[in-house]
Image (cartoon, rainbow, N blue to C red; front, side, top):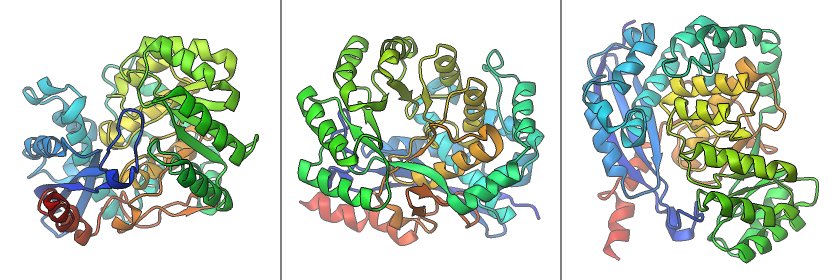
Length: 437
């Protein structure tokens, strides 16, 4: 059956998380978890759902960018897209005029992710499979055909990528069975947002420990003495053997990052996340080298523009943990490239998932990484935040601090229509009430 795309709609959906300081960090003090939410219709009634994550103001700009891209997809058949997915990816990212406002970064790339996430969701639904299973079942050559290798062949060639996928065929069935039974290890960020009081932090940490969590991330970067107090509090609560990570969300200059993080070394963090400007590859390399003797790695990637920047981070030994994002990069296609490069450079992937819908999406990618690429769980875990899952028709399932494998067909990012209508900005009922105040 041919599935011709007849319509693309996009809506600005925002959740007022800033009211309770959910998501707050050293640079984003009042985030409203939001999404440019895309629905693509086909001529036979099947729909695909996609989104890209934002933190409130500015979402309307991403919506405009999605509208600008819609003419490149409406009228296409899903089958034609799949037949030359690399070519279609380039159609969206290399339009002769629109690429000028990227290329492959910023608002236009966020919009590209939303559109392509919806295409992948539609493809998985046509196959009756969750996205991770669609990817795992693909022939390695078909996986390769979805990836744009332009600009990265000096780090990873098509043949090298194919060799990685072919080698991972061994034991793949056993790893899939393991994931179906045990799930993928997760860590929590929900206990220690920067705006939370110590009392709230203690309660959330106590509850998380009782639920089996052993890996915790703390937001830092606004005030050193406050960071020391909060890290000490968390470390005392979780004990010496559980894992602690810290996240500065781009707050510091390079020298400041080294000094500040060194002051927190006594709390034994596994990594410092986004210690400086996300575009400063050489700065991250300097920080990585300085912190290595302290046993602290550098993690980054949630605001890394594209596969080319990830290539340079890896080439420069500028990060010890790769944090892919399902909505910052150009959807599944570009994330596949980064997963394969990370494997070649032997750097573990620990995805970013702090935002509405990101847990739902990225769980599929990390399952594919373990089953079909890395075959390795050493120092690997996927972020989890306990916010807003109730708005999705196929929400994540966490059991014993593990992501359980999704069962429903698609990419898990369909929202309930009632939630979309209530939180659409500014005309949804939630916002009508708030904006009146």
